[in-house]
Image (tube, rainbow, N blue to C red; front, top):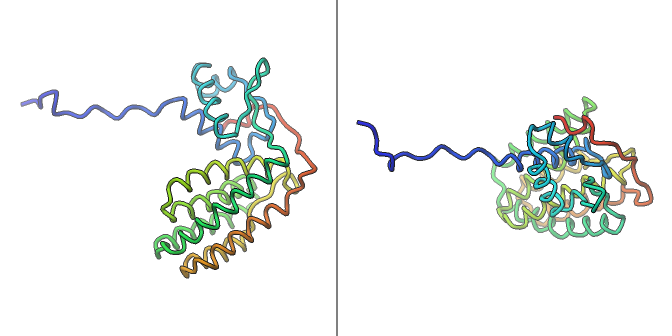
Length: 234
């Protein structure tokens, strides 16, 4: 006998297409395929994803709320270009947030967590060795987010996600040689402190690490911008 209609579950709803576009643009921004100042043309993005301008507009609006995209009346949407003052504010916020997240993560770090972090470091090292700078940049930021996830402070971890994304823009604009990434040696030292469950040392190393990244920025310079073109394509 067929099951009565009320006993069957509806199939899961397909992922909102606007969210797919949003996430793809954010990923392209974070690994520097879309540099700061890049014009984001609705028609071009819509054609790339096979979606309407309305869905593209919704994606761009969402990205503007998180500070990754600037919407200018009569001019359109652009990848945000943080000012030097914004850069200082972002890293000041990261310093406060990640000192706490590192301490919390150290207190909760299990052997399984440590294995995941070590595997991630190995990926980062391989990308750097292969000269895959964009991949290394992405992996570098993702490590900080993994540490935040281990902390189990979901609200602070979500806040850090926005800060890390905005940091990628700042590094693209002001980083040495067009981009900077977190030092692998510093990452390994930090993960060792987490594995040892040394909250005080993990917190201290995180602050030193972020200060190092901030010192490597040249806030007097700005990188050249490009058009969206094929940079958005994965």
